[in-house]
Length: 418
Image 1: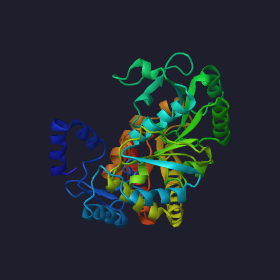
Image 2: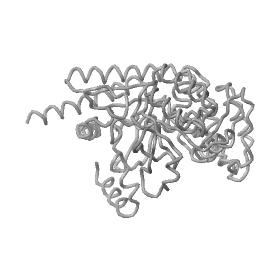
Image 3: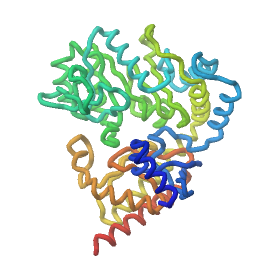
Image 4: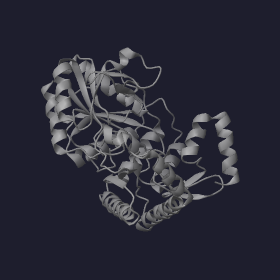
């Protein structure tokens, strides 16, 4: 880290502690282009953070820049539903024909509030069942942890009322038997079962088809609604998100992440078309037009199936490279992947649930992240947190990432031999 970057980080620690803390974990960004980010001293890094997965097209994508310019020249501001929103809904219907209607919201948080309210109103019930691998995201009620008898939860952070936590039941990820037991107890008051399809709280765990089937059948048998969390997987795993890639049929889904192209936050809620659902009257205000135009630009690019083919090829290339490094340097470096989403971890056993996640070697990961950063590669500060490739990553960029990881492993090997 150069002198100017150090000075800005010191200033952030004093005046903007959240920016300072996150700047320590990654960097304070000065500019970005393609799959590279730069700090205040113009030091360049290959980025695998991907704006928490939002930057599917890469930084400085020309289509997105044109959308921003278009929004500025039209003099559009928040307060009205932009005409471009109808264009966006047409694109959404094209990519996800099984869903309609759509409600576009200014944020993922408002999308979640709308979806959960609808589930409770539609069923006349109160309880929500989640899995311990679910992303917590912007939903206050999801910041809970299992406590006591199976499914009982308590607040994970201070400030969340206990009565809010008691309305959420937590089931171990991948445990169909535990899921059935919880539904047997509270199924009659369960409004929704919320499913993050890759257990992103644990980095990335691909669900078995048997588990997905048990969740789907059990939810509908209980008369609850299956609420699919596509805020990380939507439009990234496939044009139809995790629903298409993993074969999940949901009653309602929440989108965000990639939808804003990394330019602006935006959320969306969609209902199963064959249900003939009306979303209700208590809808949030309109999203900023720049968010709508960025989403239109993003989905227009994603109409090209070659984008997903490229992401899959680069993903397979990185996965093979990391697995070869683990074998070459005799390190328990594991790589989980679904499409262009990754989770790396130093663990002697596969990460399949909360127990195996808790045994990940965080100390070795911290050493690896610092050494990778010195080699010009940015990885998440905690393992296994999801990492991402973008459409801007080419085969030479992936080779450079693998080379940077090898440099880091060589450094660690020398340190261990001292």
